[in-house]
Image (cartoon, rainbow, N blue to C red; front, side, top):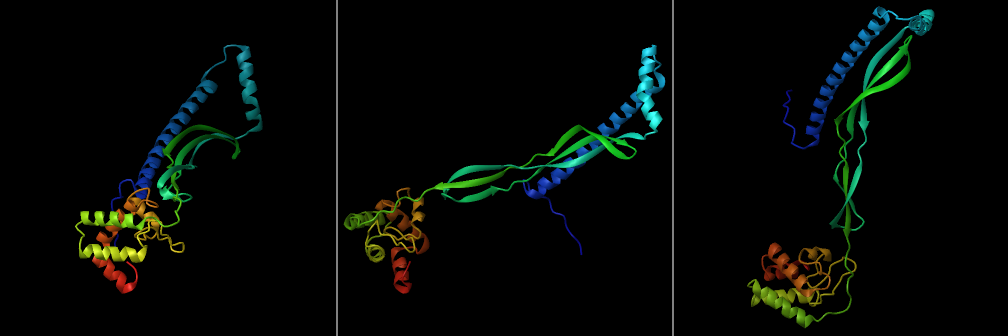
Length: 265
């Protein structure tokens, strides 16, 4: 069986992992080079001070003997080594308000991802046992990516009750339908359809299903695409309803025929 490696999608998680791996290898190389250079310099400096620098006074000679005597007396094996570890940087979380989502809902828009940091330590070992650790340098290889959560803020308007002026609403419907060229038989079909659905009452509401308004949109909030006053404005409801009929059935008679056949449209 053979496998084909594909190019990572730009901006995707796979590309981020690939870049992170490259940065890790580069950072390890940089830290390793710095650590070797520092260790070599420290060793040379140590040899230069202890082996070649002769005390210029009795006081200096006494200090040198005092400093070295305990190590020589105990015969301890002292070693300073450099260790580099990969440390995770925890990602955060950011919330943003979204008026297109219902209030109380939360949606993760961007998944969070932890970052990575390389930390280098100078570790002092005595007879193979660590006695001291000091951080010498750190390099951020990959910055953490914050999680982004959308918080819904849209609130449903209060649903009105009572019967609106069906005669006025019907007149508005006839005018808006005519603007689409739906007159004659098409108007008759539309009038029959919405008389059956709501009696042209813009406040008509089905509490069990959530259908609302003259066209009985289900749910009523669908009509928000035609206007924020969808719950009370007959013109907004009719505009949305005509668009729905056009997109789904082509004409009012098409919608009326479907309603006559199955009981709904």
